[in-house]
Image 1 (spheres, rainbow, N blue to C red):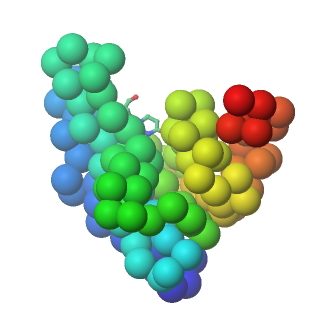
Image 2 (image 1 turned 180 degrees about the vertical axis):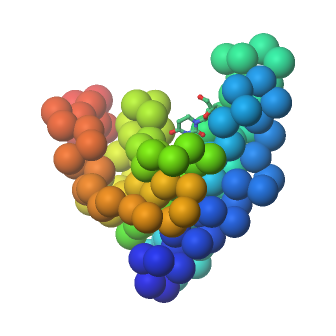
Image 3 (image 1 turned 60 degrees about the vertical axis):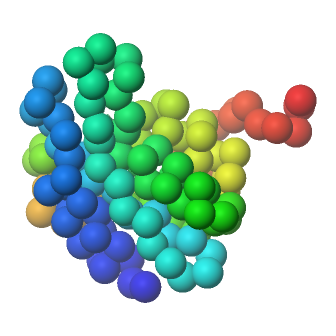
Length: 129
Ligand code: THU
């Protein structure tokens, strides 16, 4: 799976976004270490705190099917600027794959790459529990 293909899958997932409150649609595609890809979109709730981000939608889909290690995540939004994962998503992804490559894309598929370690310095982790 090439990076631009993963970004294309994230862009495609935006069509499923349920974002009637913010109008901000987000798509994600998560590449597992076995080569499979799980897509996700944001799912908003009328009680706003129930909202689930696209990245965590993809992560929970993958983990709930037995996947535990991930190589790369692509995330994009309806905005012209590149979309980076929120803090909660960074933390949850870090627990599974701290060395994840994160491809942050705009609505046309242009992207920048960061490692999750870069995006979440001094991360909390299971090691201290
Ligand atoms: N959102 C995501 O899906 N991922 C992010 O990393 C940032 C925010 C969603 C949540 C909400 O539905 C909308 O974008 C506006 O915050």
